[in-house]
Length: 349
Ligand SMILES: NC(=O)c1ccc[n+]([C@@H]2O[C@H](COP(=O)([O-])OP(=O)(O)OC[C@H]3O[C@@H](n4cnc5c(N)ncnc54)[C@H](O)[C@@H]3O)[C@@H](O)[C@H]2O)c1
Image (tube, rainbow, N blue to C red; front, side, top):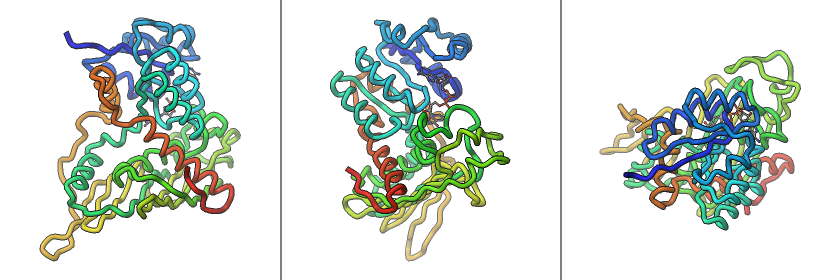
């Protein structure tokens, strides 16, 4: 019989019940056998809905279960590092939601702990698994777009502060739209650029709308009284080898259209955009803008991430999105926040 990966779920809120548990339910090679949430009612509700046999009272209890080989961390950002470090100490593999952590220091500790424990660490930057992103990657790999030297990445909501969780609280979240939704846009542009080494970033954050009363948006009204993160972040990132990335990320910005986890890639033979998918080519002396048809996700991208992690653990293969890569994205984010504070370009170590 094929091997099965037994998992423990840590944090049973929105992303766990909306994306991860359905993904695990559709995974032939994995089973969630226990869950834990500081809010026991949420853990019980998730366990009932998704037939999880055991609800643990503490993280310690969950991590002490020998039958569990891996954990799936779906807690808010402030808990990613503590939960992952505890899991590595208990000898478990870790799949953790994005961002890797609150900052690069915590992320680096997670990467080091995974290495020390000889366990796998994968971060849920699932947009890489999207059909449009994979299609553009295949064009790049086939040389159709030539040398890719520039990318523009965007996660913009006109009014889209989450009305649940702790997404507007810096001390619990690490930042605002940049660390929450910008992280996806940066990651997929960086992935399509070929994962180059970032060397510096010049950025600026704006705080205008989120912390003032009387607004509502995509997710209704948010708690403006506790909102202390940026509304809008912009930056230019330079990479070794001369490539550059321009990025914009907003929970609130007076721009006409929302565009999330999107990127435009510029090469010397062609270009491409994801979300929406478009390809710019030159054929027989004619410039063409193409809209590829019937490009679909192989499965929900969140699920593809979880299944990739499962195969990597069971078959002892590398994970698709290792902690080291997510740490690089986090260093760009940290650099942008620092640059905004200092009012100048900063180096990325
Ligand atoms: N990849 C994506 O598209 C995506 C989308 C949404 C959220 N996320 C990420 O998922 C994480 C959770 O977001 P969410 O929207 O599910 O938030 P949420 O607030 O809906 O859920 C978080 C859950 O964690 C629980 N929790 C808090 N602290 C805990 C702790 N120390 N131990 C155990 N449980 C704890 C809470 O009680 C809650 O049930 C965040 O890091 C977020 O960035 C990713």
